[in-house]
Length: 565
Image (cartoon, rainbow, N blue to C red; front, side, top):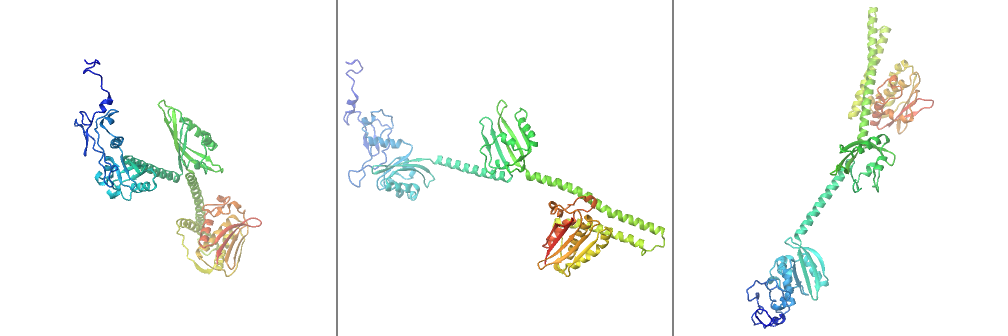
């Protein structure tokens, strides 16, 4: 035992004494070699950091600083092995995971770590003392090159992203330290690729959202969602527009929704919504009318579903609404068309039955006349009268069939016209003379005033049809009263007027009477299919003219036809 009671004897030798051992003493630190540090015990060493330190002689690089061992050293190890602060900084450069290099005032590499050499794709020998873009020409013109040149010129640091020709992305930090420019570059390729993928995904979702919104707008549809836990309400862009609001409303409540519903529909909708909060109903579909701020009514159909929590309570209600106003209008039009068809079939059967019944009676009378008067001839007054009546009924039947065929042609756009220059006065006079007997039987005094001649371009057969239909209409509604026909012409037009003394036509119906299957009051009693005036308008429109109804003094209606000359 020594004096101190410790093995080996003597007092403990302090750290300061050990650090003061001469270099050639046993246990001295390893000596520097060109390849790095060679410790006496043969431990693994770091290679000497790749750097260019200031040289003692101009133009000549100095020797690189020594390397250190990878063995973890205690806090005083740097002094023990004789490392300077600069040498320790070089070790730290090698240990960091980022690329680090410095440039002198001329942009030449002064020092760099192995990460920087690998990232730039050059060896230390290639880049040492040179500008990086000269040692590696692929760097020339890149963002890295341009930003570093700017930093060298302005002597200002910064931070930026740069992509290398190898498709490597770097996050680069530049700092100006004295006459040097320090560059720290982190490889963020994976992060950049992930961000790019996120951006592409966001763009895809944005486009999908836009397409979905276009689809909703095109379909006049909207979606909504209410979170009963957070109170948040989501509405797509078209939601408020479907309730008549041009701009989105600040808030949308259940009370506001119910207030917009037609009173006749509100109770049913409330019951359907309330049913969602029972344990056996998870969805509903309702159709209702909603009142817009402008006072108009529109049809909506809504379907809603719920999401429940683990206890079965409703936490989210979501749904979609669709504007079906046009569909409802079409449905109403179809229903009206069915009613019109049924009315037409009833009228047509009546109108066709009337002349057929008359024909049957006339034939029966002729048969009886022949049986009772064996010597009767076709020239006798009785026989001639029966034949005339039969002919009138046949003409009436033929006119009905012609009108039906013409309406069909009009609907398919196949109503043919053959225009030619002619005198319309002769057409009107001929038709008026043919209707003289029908006027007499109807108790109508038929007066006509026709200017002659009345030259214009028209389809003779179709204009005969126009005059005939107008006279038939006048006889039907003006029975027993005068009917006047006039034809006048001016330099720019020819005007035909057929005026009756019947009950007249209310102002609200004067345009509607030209619609298909439309008739005036007491139509069933007066007869007709409601086609004659419709055909008149189609023919006059094809001639480039106009037909309308005017009120006449003392009652009645005047149908006015204007044709261009």
